[in-house]
Image (cartoon, rainbow, N blue to C red; front, side, top):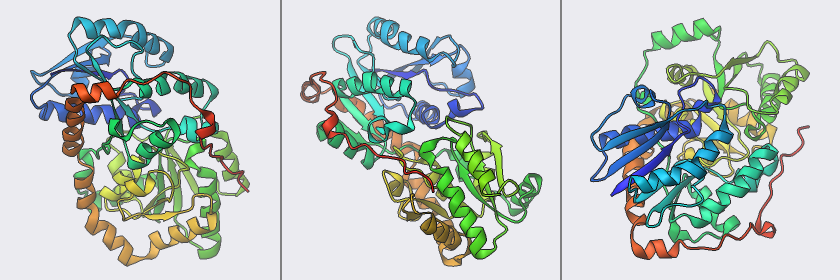
Length: 410
């Protein structure tokens, strides 16, 4: 088959654009270059140097660059909807994969559409997104999901959301977990970790959160739990909130000040790829109390590094926790404080996380992700499945949508 992949959101910038979806695309392309199967691939990228920066090549992979600033999403959307269909037709693409929620409105005749859905936050918890993003997803993502030949869901939780909220037939949906990058497999010497802690001024140990600073991540509740932990146990362990600023992040800094934690909470900003394993492995424990995630790859990455993890009981996070992470009600700061104390002091739990790290890497491997993705491509071209994908472009029945609410932080 000739397969097209839209990699416009692949980014090498050192900010939030180089986040979850960009990394998903990067790992997919890197592994396809190693194990492409019997198919040929045309990869549509942003920037003439993207293929070189990606560092992969294979005779079965062809890169087609477009050029515009990453900071111009309206231009990208126009290109995807107006220009890309012509390119697919000219190149004879048989299966087109969008790794980021949205397909072109008009695919060429005979071209199957595969879309990866990362989450349905715009339906489950619309208040955690800006209004333009809600409108975009309600317009383009919903229509793409209804028209797609096959859908890749990044977790069983996301797969269930598709069935419950949009009544998508389960036969059209395959769960394919994202993968953990190989850089997390390298074991770091204790001397290197000690030197890193010294450079960061964290020799007394630290709790780590890594992700975008935005409402969905539930950081104000984490700050309440951390303040309670300090009050109840007297711990001197710092709290590191690593990640780029998303939107409505001002409430986080306001809560730090209100709790008098200016000297205890560290904001290192966006962490680049090279330093991520250092931050994980140097941490005393990792905490990710998000209110909703399509998957939650930082949870799996931390576990792959052998670090104790505390995360939420909701959405996909128990799946990312692989049966190892401590899971708590993300709205309960008391339970969160208790779990953090367990992660910091329970030697048996800490040893189990270290011992089971290789099994987490195996469960979320790049090889497994690509094998399963190629299987979806092959399934998409069968006439029976293609017929099943035809559905009406009706609007979302909002009576079936379960709207979550971010509870007011006390």
